[in-house]
Image (cartoon, rainbow, N blue to C red; front, side, top):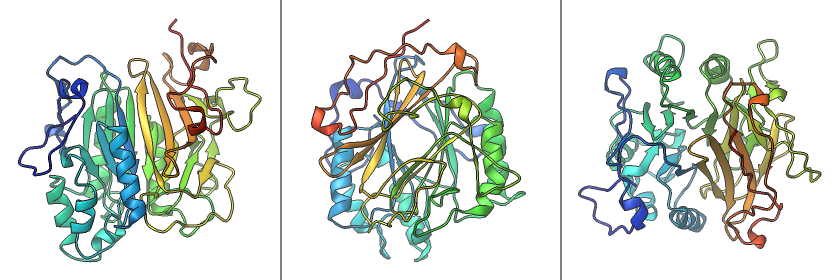
Length: 367
């Protein structure tokens, strides 16, 4: 856990996290993009991070933050739209129990309703640019800005392109996570996907092996199958069927939630921080699960960083309402390189009533 400097709230961290302090450098210049380092060396350790956007300053936002604090994440990825007011003060008060140095935020459209808002959030989270990247353990994160020019030839496009190229050749990075505010793809709801972003960046994400893309803006939860850009019909992405691992579970609610790393990218919308929810009119064919609930997405690296587990926690009793796993294969896209033997006797770390879909924690046995 990063330790705050000159920050007034008294923060309490578990002893095991106090002894594993990491320094994170944000960068949107490749020369200054430092890898993480630890006081105990560069050994890969499993960790958790959370993602959510679209908070506001109401009771639902307070519940979301309370549950995030209980999850004790190493990082909080903000997906944009925080206070919904002309000042950041009320949101800063709500998240006051979270170290601002672990908050790595992107910026939404509501941050631009007042000239000073973006500056307030940047100062609070110690950012100097609206788009940037950083490494944490074996994960590379890219925070993009959908409210800032991103077209081909823009400074942001050049940064993201070269950053992905560099990350692809870094042997210490096993996962690439991109996050921003406005999503590319969505089921039918209050907003549509951002077509210009989709048509320019989805192929780029596929080319350089982006594993997971997170967005907000739409006030519900949606999670896709691994997707490939469809150049002939861009609004209808192609589901990468070879990435979906059949675990032989007869319960359809559990099936198709385990993915072997291949070409496809998983997209998730987590605009569930507290602002009034948007209804879902239909479920797109490429959407594996969708929910109208406040809450947050927790992501955990497990098995020495070789697997990434995502769990959506609803504020309604912190119930897990979605779970998915992305497994790294020794040969990308080759499912035969993955041990498909699962230990069904390992329960989730939650009581049975917190696991309504009877999801199982999957134990991958090393070859």
